[in-house]
Length: 471
Image (cartoon, rainbow, N blue to C red; front, top):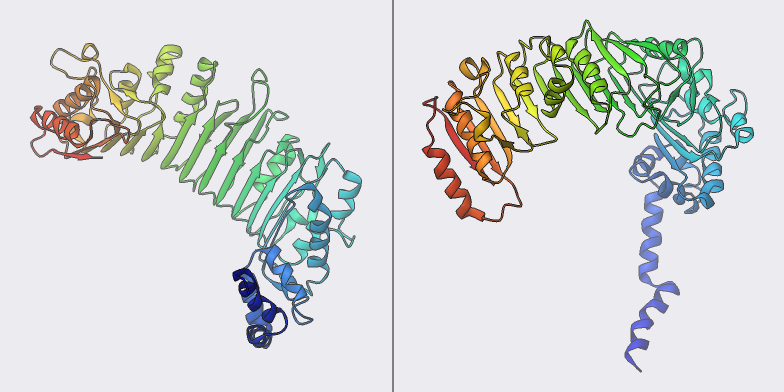
C-alpha cells in the first residue's frame, strides 16, 4: 500500500462515523443543552454572518441568532444583496420583541426608491428602520449608497427615546422632519450628508438636548447660508471637510457654534465654510487645512475661528497658517486674541521655520505657554535671527513660562542645529529639550552622539535645562 493510501485511510474512518465524530456529536449535544441565555452570549461573540450560519446546526439553534443584542449587515458584493435583504427581514420578523442594542445596515440602494420606500414605511412589515426603532435600539449605523434623489427617513427615527449613538452615511439630500426629539442621543455622526435647508438642519441640532459628541465628515452645506449649532451638553465637535466636493466659488455657509460645555474641537479642510464660536469653553483644538489656492479666503476664516477660541489650553495646528496670514491679512494677525490659557502648542504638518515672523507674532499672544512641540522638525537660517542668535521679536513666554520643547524628525542639519541653539539661548526658564531623530537618519548612533555633543556645548540661558536625545 502506498503512502497516499495510508494517509487517506483515517479520513474514511472519520466519515464513516469514527470515535472522533461521536465525540463531536457529544460535544454538540452538550453545547445545545446549555440555557438560551448562555448560547446567545456565545453567539454575540461571533460576527452576524457566522451567527446566522449556526441556524443549520439543529432545530434548537434555528432562531437563536435572532435574539443576539448586536446585528451587523453589510452587503459586500452585489450578488449577496438578496441574501442580505432576506437575513435582515428574518432578523426583524423573528425578533420576538427582544430589544436591539446595536444595529448596522449598509447596502447599495441602486436608485431603487420604489423598493426602498416600502422598507421605511412605518406600518409595512419590511419597514427596517421603524422596526429597529421600535425594538429600542441604542446604537444605529445606517449606510445607504447609490440612491438617486432625496430620501425622507421615517419620523420615528427622529423621536427615539432610546437611541444613544446614531451614525448616518447617506450621500444624498437629507430631509429632517419638522419635529426632532432625540432625548437620549449622546453621539451623532453624519457622513456625506447634503443638508436640505436651514430650518430642518437647525431642528436636527437643537433636538438633541444631551448630545455630547458631534462628528461631521464631508457634509455639504451648499443649500444653506446660515445655521447655528446649539447643544448645551456638547463636549466634542469634529469637522472633516478634506474630501468635500463642492464649488469653491459658492461662498459656503456660515456655521455659528454655541458651546458652553464644549471642550474639544477638530477641523480639517479648506475652510469652504465659515465657522465661528460664541460662549465657547473649548480648551483643546486641532486645526489643519488642506492645500488650497484660496489662501486669502482661508486666512480670513481662520482668523474668525481663532477669535472664538481664546480659551484654548492645547492647540495643534500648522505654523504655515501664520506665514500665510502675515502675507495675506497682516492687519488681522495683529488683531489676534490673547491666548492667556494656552499652555501647549503643537506645530505639525510641515517643518517649522523658527524665523517666520507670522509664527513669532502668534507666540507673542501666548504669554503662558509651557510646552512647544515641533512635530515635523525645525529649522532656522543664520540670517533669520539677530547676530547673537536671539529671535526677533522674542515672545514673552520664552522669558517667563516656556519649560519644555520637543523636536521631532530631526536630521542634524545645520539649520536644525542652529534652531535648537537659538532656543537654548533665548528660553530663560527652560527645563527640558527633547530631540527625537528621524527614523531614516543614515548616520546612526555615531552621528547622534556627535550632534548631542554639539547641543550640549551650546550656551544655555537656563542653568537647569536638560537635553534628551531619542532615536
